Image 1 (cartoon, rainbow, N blue to C red):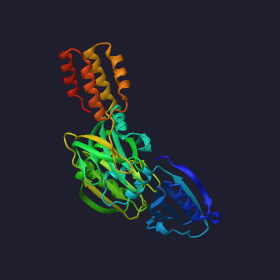
Image 2 (tube, rainbow, N blue to C red):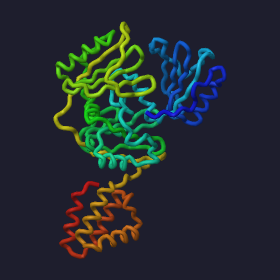
Image 3 (cartoon, rainbow, N blue to C red):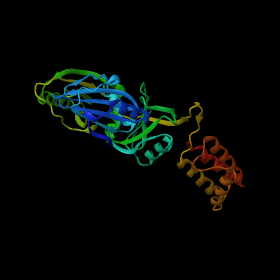
Image 4 (cartoon, one colour):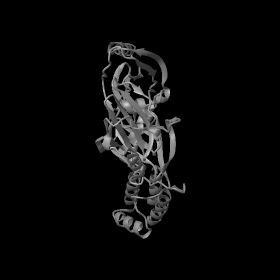
Length: 384
């Protein structure tokens, strides 16, 4: 998470809170407001200028409900700060409250392969192609100002599962609608095991639920998981309000993730204050012997909900050009450029319809029938 400080430790005595609320809304800011008193900290989270959640913590770290929609300053003895975050990353604090974990609980974990950006700036299909070329382990996530819309899980650049908040798709074709003006996309690289385990969260089954009051009790449960060689997710809600996740694969701890008050970080261990009340759940995970394979296509929509046709992958166009040159000879490269120009085509932005039209034009340019047939046979093997 990359936070930017817009306001830092402003004295509450001089703060006009209503004006700050108004500015956050007017500028459609995303991030969180932090109000610090001597005995508590209050947090209000914003996405696109709208408050989406809040929490308050006392001096002992106990988390309590905050009336974030009608917030009032408790007293003037304190400070106020506002930290800007990408909308895609601030939404995860909303999903932190889910009692039953989903892949959305882990959005923003990992290293940024593509920092969150609006889909007016990038084409998600091109982003997916880049991830494939990089043999990425990780995930692509799409959201708007209110919620996550989908996640696509990758292993070595291959799409192994798609999740839309309701279902997991692990085979076949997926066409997903993206709104150009309102949606964001981000890409994160992770350990290979993480993307695999996240893609299998549809198999989660609650096996154990209990309270624990010390670090030793938590470690005892972890040792039990290791001895049973279980593949599972340990989900601990701590008295501090933090949430700790530990993935195990065949009893081996793969990764620990701590979702704190202000960020998500890797953490193999957490501090447990003796005597505090903490809640723990252990969910089993079934990992198949073979990973899934999905072919995902993002389809744009404008404000009038008219579909934009996605571009054919650059690699496919490059292969088409190569097939043409192979069958017509060295002059093919010059003919290729001339044909594109005379027909108003851009090889970097070919729709499927334009691609099919180009194939027919190229076929007609090949004089020899035998080479023409070879060209068409090669093209048929291409995936557009």
